[in-house]
Length: 181
Image 1 (cartoon, helix red, strand yellow):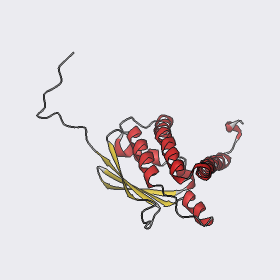
Image 2 (image 1 turned 120 degrees about the vertical axis):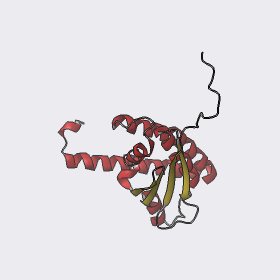
Image 3 (image 1 turned 90 degrees about the horizontal axis):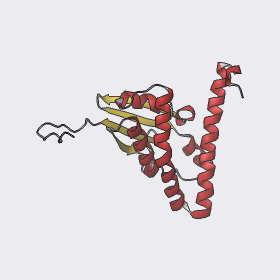
């Protein structure tokens, strides 16, 4: 396919279709593993996949959009807005302070699909801790991630909520400098 031949509207639709297809494939894979091996094994394998995928996704976004390495919460906010999820889910970010960013998944396609099928909410907290922590640290290793709410915990006015805190590098004050080599 020649992407240059597509109009802006066609390119937008294509990105939306690609994101939905990626998410549908992820869900089909997970349900197939769950059916054959059970929820616990499916969760373990899903967690392992996110361990590998999250940093790759972050690095590719940073490279494609010229986000600086160790760019702090500004780079993280821009990177979160460029994830595949951002195309199919409604999410929002809010700066709480100079060193804290909050991220909320207001509408979640995965949870909506489970609700339509009469299934319990997907218990995504454990996998989300892996996913968001490794994504954030790939953007800037100084970022610490904390889950404020996610299934299987109570869901409030959003499906999940995360806090990202920028921790400064440890100070060398009062410490001996390493020997020169």
